[in-house]
Amino acid sequence: MFFFVLGTKAELIKTAPLMKEFNKNKLEYCFVHTGHHKIDELCEQFKIPLPDISLFKAPKTSSRFFLKTKKAIKWGILLSYKLKKLFSNCGKKDLVIVHGDTITTGVTSFVARTSGLKVAHIEAGLRSHDFFEPFPEEFMRVVADHFSVYLFAVSKTAADNLRQEGIKGKVFLTGNTIADSVKMSLKMGRKSEWKNHVIVNIHRNENLQSKSRMKRIVEIIKNISLEIHWPIHDNTKYALKKYGLWDELKKQKNITFSPLMSYFDFLNEMKRSKFIVTDGGSIQEESLYLRKPCMIMRMKTERVEGLKTGINFLTKLNLEYSKKVIEMLEGGFKIPKFTNPYGEPGVSEKIVKIIEALT
Image (cartoon, rainbow, N blue to C red; front, top):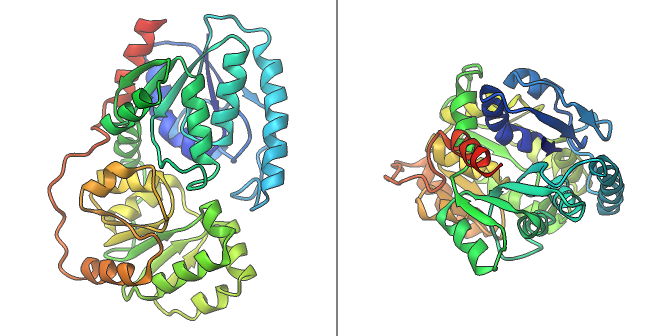
């Protein structure tokens, strides 16, 4: 029996092509949702069945924990108990498939392996080499990798990371399933009314919990002269108001705020943008497939491969460096030629073939 255990929208987005490939090959699986995010609509859009098992009721807000670390820890403990119960009746031949670097990923990997089940980690090997940048994602992906039997590395660098850490599981260099997600999703989204603008997406926990970081991010964004569209997370808006920065941003006539968009529409809008400003992880990868410059509002990134392409820029929240990048991107910046370090579409098919051979 195969189990897909997922919690967030990002996990589902990157795993949906793999699940569809399972369906295509008539491989039965149990879809377990931990309830980190609300995903019903996304399942419908990707045309995959709703979860077979839901361990927690999904929140109405875009963030379950809303900047509360203690709440996240408590939820992780409760999740481990529910997973332990779920896996108690499973056999050693069963395979639990997890993705990425969320609390769901780390907790599920640990509980499944200590329950005697095999674990496959999709998107293995990414490293920032700092447990606090990003937190808790760096810790969760390390836990998942160390408790996995099969590890599907997204790049040569990721595979090298796993070997250098002495990972005991079998490592397969496959590329990133986001390639399949992007190819599939661009066909499903609506054509954006926006064009040659800047799209902003800020939601990282280590940024939202720091007033000084948010002030620097706001200062950087204020230096952009192009039209800005910012589909905003509820916890980001809460943090901006808490730090007295919301009214400051609202005065900027070139910024338009909106509710969060569907993934398909957001991807199509990114495709029509001039460049992207984000502190997210997946968006860095998507920018490479869309060949759109991306300013990364972080101190460190685990997607280091993108920095070598010439279109991903790690700002480290440095205002002067960011001003130079903005000036360059708003000018006559030409996209350099590069080979995508995360591979091309077809990754999901490759992973399924490997899993079939292994099981």
